[in-house]
Length: 165
Image 1: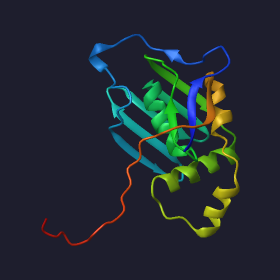
Image 2 (image 1 turned 180 degrees about the vertical axis):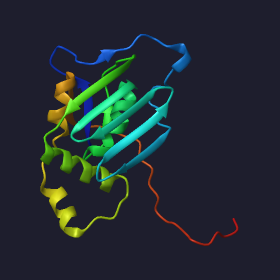
Image 3 (image 1 turned 45 degrees about the horizontal axis):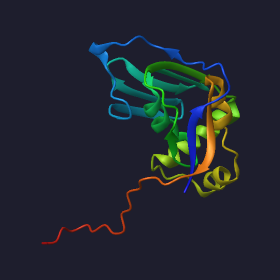
Image 4 (image 1 turned 90 degrees about the vertical axis):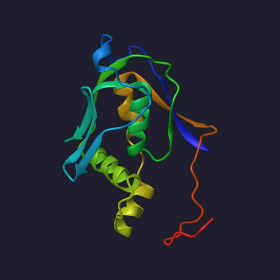
């Protein structure tokens, strides 16, 4: 299926590599914690000092691994994001987007989080260009459009009343 591959872009890589901290280890690729958001922006706390906020057009993350960054950026994308960077550390990250792109990314996050939005807004999302690939270039990373195999969970039926097996 169509995906974005998160890869190293043109040098220099603009991620602040953090020294190893065994007391505050972040499990790479595991996304747990609390998420809050609304019209003003989104905040995610993973614990152990790892978090990100996307408020006022500024994405600021602390102690994020590349796999976790890819998982969280998927919230703002129009397709899955697969981490192919091979980066092993934790990083502080920051990028900015213009107000129009910020609103586009928040609308995508709302839809990807399962919020029901008006049909007019949904049509706008379908016609908007995704600004995320250009924003990620500020980090020295790139979202490369590819077709890859990805794991999906498909639910083909839900029953309200449990039945005996």
